[in-house]
Amino acid sequence: MTKQVTAIDPQSLIQFAAAAYQDLGMPFDDALLAADSLVQADLWGHQSHGLLRLAWYCARLRSGAMRAVTKTEVMVDAGAICVLEGHDGVGQVIAKQAVDESCRRAKAHGVGIVSVRNSNHFGTCMYFSRMGAAQGCITMIMSNAGPNIAPWGGRQKKIGTNPWSIAVPGGKYGSVVMDMANSGVARGKIYLAQKRREAIPEGWAIDKEGRPTTDPAAAIEGFILPMAGHKGYVLGVMIDILSGVLSGSSFLDQVHGPYDPVNKSGAGHLFISMNVQAFQPLELFEKTIEAYVHSLKDVPLAAGHDQIYYPGEMENLANIKNRQEGLILPIDTLESLKELAVQANLKKALPTELQDE
Image 1 (tube, rainbow, N blue to C red):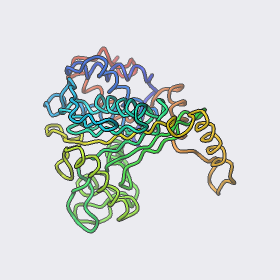
Image 2: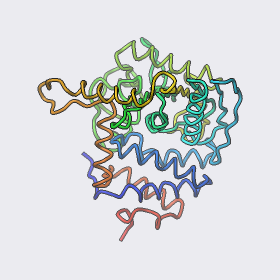
Image 3: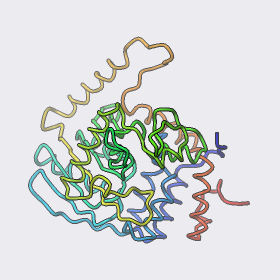
Image 4: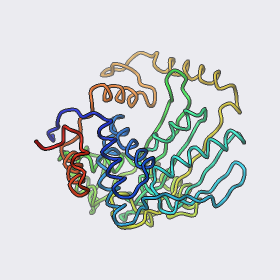
């Protein structure tokens, strides 16, 4: 396993990532949002979607594949429905606008639907679906992604992992939230294993010849396997249609992921928010969810388990722990931050733990 270093204050990591984005022309508020989304993923324990990706995003900004200044445009404005043109802007900035717009329309119409085209990768879905839940909405988000899954029975990359998330207002629990890809594992987790120089579990991927592999490099060159076999393949296709085709954006292997430094992404997203208050009083709904979670957790434990977690609870607990104790990141991720600091002359902006003596 890769060696790790002393825990680092999350706020200092946010400040450094924001400085790196600003150095490439991103406005302050946008840079802070994008930086916070990465560090929050690390705080939740999802290092595959955290600061590991900062260098990727910066490379896309340098090449012009992603525009530093995000200027969205409303293409369709039809009551509950909105189609938003992203013009290759920053994915996190576009996603924040889209989730807020979906909630605004939900408050007016009961439901709000925002379809987004020509965006970019926006990090972990739950960062934004939780924003919808905090506004009293049940929010579903989905996105297509660069291809890394073959059609079921095929041997050519066509479909992305195509993640989706649903977040529900949860009363005292904050939100009950699901966030998952339609592959057996997110591609970022394979990149993380490569960074850590670790083998990946059997069943995650096959190599380019279709043979099972535990080598992350061979998996990246080969194919990620869909979750639940053909069922994951079908889910991935439908999310690509809802995110890419419906929005008028790119789809299948026309989409380029964040690890591609030069090609425009063409990513499409779909944001659906339902105003709980339109169905029943929000306070009643949240009390019912609290009782629901209590009932979920109030069952005998199976062997090898010490508690039942509601969806999103593991991330909540990791967030509390990591904010108290600081973040411990893989050495290779930290080295990439140092390299960025040298490139942008931002060595003084690095967290003190990463500054050379």
